[in-house]
Amino acid sequence: MQQRKLGKNGKSVGAVGLGCMSFAGVYGPTDMAESHATLARALELGVTHLDTALIYGVGHSEEVIGAFIKDHPGRFSIATKGGIRTGPNREFDNSEAYLRECLEGSLKRLGVDHVDLYYIHRRDQRIPIEDVAGTLSRFVEEGKIGGIGFSEIAPSSLERAASVHPVMAVQSEYSLWTRLPELGMLQACERLGTAFVAFSPVARGMFSRELPRLEVTSKEAFRASNPRFLEPNFSANAAYFERFNEYAKGKGVAPATLAIAWVLHQGDHVIPIPGTRSSAHLEEDAAAADYKLTAQDIAEIEAILPVGFAHGARYSDSQSVGPEDYC
Image (cartoon, rainbow, N blue to C red; front, side):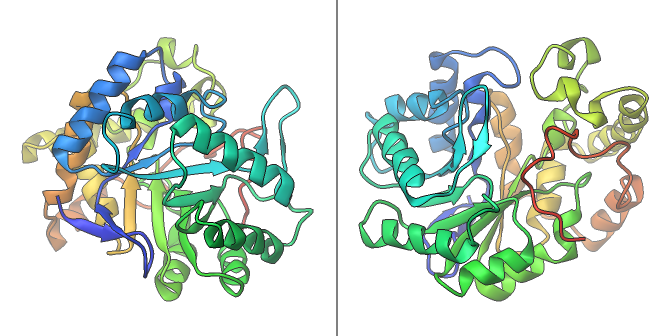
């Protein structure tokens, strides 16, 4: 698989990574064996960057990864995230004491003494981001993390954090149906030598050979309240994806492969991390790294899914608390 760098001075990883939220059952039930089969296939495919977080099953995703890498040490680059208090009264806490607690817990669950990348999962607006970057820089100095990152921040916040310490990566949702990062974040990351890690590049399962069914998504914690998966928005969105699927079929390629190839095409500093618990789906995702798009392909794809086509907001009101607005 082609390689891309985690930031200007970071290590090289497979151009397509693996988001591990699904290991916690967010998009349906799974078990350790299925997750480990997916991780084993990732190694075979050259998918070497894993992305997890404390809140994915309250540490369960990290435990699944830790159990696997115990027998496969040093094979993956691992990123995890902290800064959100779990429990019924979930809140953001970027204090040094809590971030240290989060990081130590993550290292223990993963069974390692170091992770390559550590993100602030959501900004705590009570604390200047410069102070938070300073906290993370101390973790780097202590050898606990290789680089610092932030999830769902604004370009201006990236500029402020980078003035204190180089930011290895910024993570935001990015796909053909979520294109906000094009309005400043992709450019800021490229300018500052920061990797842009694109989560949900397959649009939370919409870029699949068979579209999600409402009777399934209505029982899930996340998609059940997400505006894009509620009627009448869902049917309107499904019509667009059905046309895209026909286009992909005509090309002889899986919709997920084509969608992730489009994300990769947006810049050499972009690293998509599709999430899946399925080895078969991972194979389609990973194939994007070697799928070359022409200028005509790009034009045809964007004619089928024009910028702004999605019906419904990216998040519900409760889900939208935390990500920073900038446009």
